[in-house]
Image (cartoon, rainbow, N blue to C red; front, top):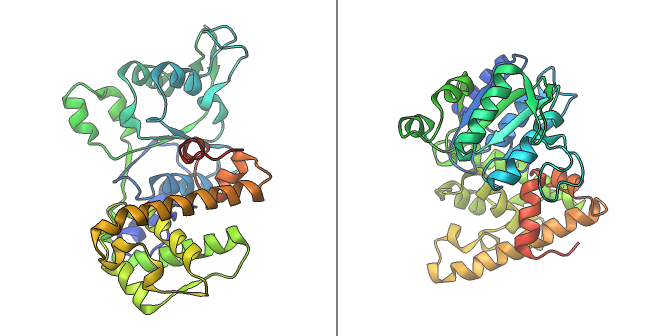
Length: 310
């Protein structure tokens, strides 16, 4: 996947791998904590794929992406005529995950009314769609993630204590990339293979100097930033070996005034990669999102932001 899954050689990743193996086939709710870009969704997907639910749906939901009204109908479903524009019934993410796993990313962004409704789903194992009174039974394994301090949010009255305890059964903390340097080069090699597969060409390699540049950098954007850097280098390197010159300016310690130019290049690289993924999947966005290792909501946002025309 785009954020590397459980790839790495660090002791921290080894511990997470062991815990994930032990809990995969349990029904317990899992809370994944960590900074943005550390690979929380990839860990959630790994838990699902190694569980007895692997042949059923894994439904990722970005809780920060939508407004309350729209989000409620997308999460819980709605009946026809429930609100203006509801011209047909929608089962919602929760029913779509029936039998499988529901991944609620950035759970801390959920409003208090939606938290109450989610708590009822967990307690009663059934969901009521917007505009409906009929409960639908659901069998879902909930995995959630956040970069926020939920305990502080509970104290401040911004997150329900009863929901917090329901979700906080098994807790996995994914450390930032800067705290696990042993994982940097294995992850970089993984992302180079992803790029090679995307473009149907041999995987490129990092020169010793380029490897050192990756090891010396602080990775404020974590594994996601590493994935973007490798993508940038793969596209810019004309040959099979990636040199420091093919890395973004910030990794070479160049003048910060060059950074806007570097960011423009990264945007161009991202646009070309998404267009290529769409082309290779016959412009089927769900298939393109799977190829890129991101969820469909994130792909839709990037398509809109980058002005990509379908």
